[in-house]
Length: 560
Image 1 (cartoon, one colour):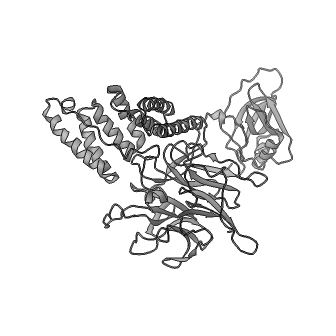
Image 2 (tube, one colour; image 1 turned 90 degrees about the vertical axis):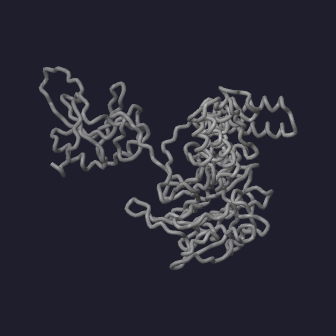
Image 3 (cartoon, helix red, strand yellow; image 1 turned 120 degrees about the horizontal axis):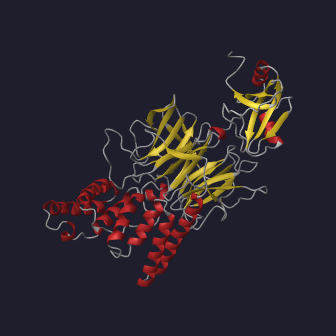
């Protein structure tokens, strides 16, 4: 079973194959003229073509030779085309965009595939509008050219256009979090995938070559398991799973089942089966096959159990040759049901892979090329409704998904997560995690409450307010402000902030709603009750004859 089909670890062009395409011939006179250096550099292009044909392992060397030529003459259409093709097939595919754009400007009729490749490069760069324009141009070209594959190509390009339209929609939705690559030694310049967090330990799979090892043959899988431990905020204690021989023939971990058992994919069993394994003091030992899931004539590559171990969702190609998601359930007598295929809410007419079930079994995450993917595999989520029926899967959006392949979503510790993506500049898969975004806001927009409340904003520490002149005797008083908002808060919001016995008073100055408690003659009394209000970031406001004067912070009876 090819590694590509099993785990999508080899970098490939999800938006359409360029394998049949090769370099364009670079005209000697157009590139170098009579320049001696240019004529010498032409040898680089011949060498680069041979390296390109060798495959991914020679990509960087190929690109280096082409770039050396490009420094000499960056206005040659065929050379720019070859550089773009190199990026699009093996590297950071979005990097192909400026080179294909240069070709379009220099020689727009260089060949019919230019607009397809430029559309793909724009899509990978999230420039969906330009991608759609170039895809439509390519559609017009192939309709005029005709041929046996015309209808097939038109359907494929129409799918790309729909993916771009989805991308345009998702780009307009703002997320309150970002994603970032995990650091070394988790991610390297190799393919790193399938991360599973288990307490302070992280398991993952990689095809990296360790120091002292020799590269194996191209057709030999190097995938194997590794682990690291989080100590004092740093990932350390890097180790190879299972044996001191660093075998490359070990099963691949895909999920944690319970305290003692883990789920592995064994590519050496049948056509690829799932097995339970346990670890003793040193080694991982096979416990048993997942017999109620595995089928001899098919490939089972991913599975996830609920926390009670009575429901499992898994991926298999038993139904039509592509990946689909099935489930089994255990009855009251401990017997497993026959596998049942999920409906169209989850399975599409494209490939599905990498399934993950929530502990209670009411939410399922998976990767798919179908539904409303924005390119390649995207990560989707489906939930059960109040009647227990699965709802239509929803794209998890940007930044989790991209025009690249985004796979193996793994949820842990609340809403933290891990996933794989090959969106990096070297075209390899890396492991990404959630990153919270700290929004830059003005002082007047800072939330100063202990619990999140929609649109609650507190004023800055010192807000001078004009004092009206008055002949009346000056009376100074102090109140405790618990929140301010440009939108009037509901009672249930206020009750989340403050649960004391004082009445909450509100005022509105035409822009801000302010909420205070108490009315004290002495600052010391105000401080005393502020410290006991239960609102961590409450502050004191002084008043002169009921006119707001200034905010007083950083006072506490405990630090006076």
